[in-house]
Length: 74
Image (tube, rainbow, N blue to C red; front, side):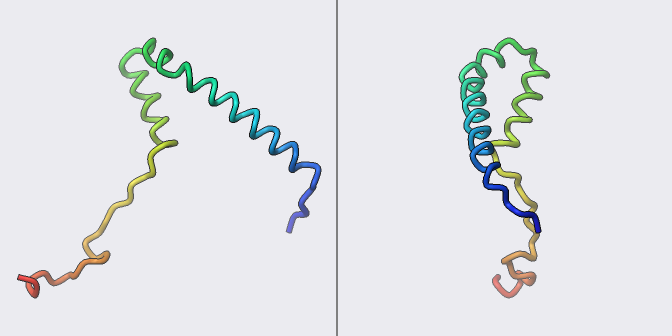
């Protein structure tokens, strides 16, 4: 098991704050950037961003939380 270095914690927090600030400032200009992109390029960027915002869906199988014999319910 790795030892935690207390000197790294403030640096990590500072780095996260800086990165968060950069991302927030870039988000403000995102609509204008997307407007300048061509259709396929814009779609590619939007699809990549969707993965960061929307949860991935999982397939639902009929055997999960459902009876397998529907004839008994008819």
